[in-house]
Image (tube, rainbow over the protein chains, first blue to last red):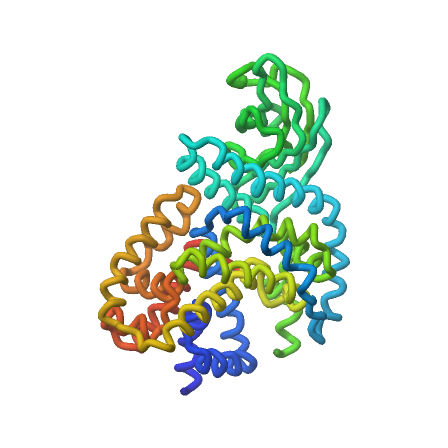
Length: 248
Length: 196
């Protein structure tokens, strides 16, 4: 196959639409063609977006089986060139305290919360399942965003919260853990802090101590996210001192 | 790969988002990090496998293999080559396709039947994509492709057909499908604002 012909295969290669032999031939071509390599990378990122669009909520048993298998699986050592990556890894470690906290919360929220919730309420199961899938996919996408920021804080009154925001995706998620139930039907309400005023950004579903939710509206222009306890149904402006304030 | 590609221009800067950090920890045997990574990607892995493999039990099997493979080969992930999500999804698609293609290798594929199945399957994929508000952007961008681009891309990716099979199914010349896969994907890339 000529070079020009090979170059037109970037799309088919990125979509996994070549046979094994063709893919191997094209991979050899990539070693010599920088423009193709860059194009393939971008098209593979694009294909991954197509995958995100069909995310589902996996059954809990899948997690159990995968986790059970790990101790038996020997991890591969880094490839030769891995030494070059060290500076980057060092940079990443600065983010780890946030990530560790955020990640645990996501684990609790998405896996535990949504799946269990979807099963508990037989009547609303279907609707909730769909909504859970949407939320789970959106939270996954947020976590995957290259520009995602993480801020975690302990909340006055108990529990902790993490704000994950991506300007590029125009989304913010709030991940919470160990929120105590509030007396008198009061609810947890989230707020964007914009230009010194607090804008309502959604209510935490009542009766759940751990979970994840998307905020109403994106993070652009906001300098922080606050959480307060409000009367049933929520308020249009905060009526109590914040339980927590987080950056975005 | 030439050294020049590894440094300098922004487009090949290493990815350093949340998933990349998690993978880095996973590569050092951190099971807690893997739990988090699992939470972030398992739904997408399973969803993609299901599109390609169809059979629910086999799909879960393949998804399980993929997720364990992520654990096993995390150290081989190179952030200069692309994002963690793209790395995992490329692996996922390959495994799913391997499963259907090996199943088909035994019995020669019946294209007539496949063509019948194809229309329904394609509609279903479209519906799945359309139904979900969260996937609005992908839907909108797929909608901006020409029909042939969209059919080629979705048949190849969501159904795991080779471009030859895709050409057969669509009754289109091989070269045309090859080109539509590329220009369709490029248009999607631009519409979704994807950079690498």
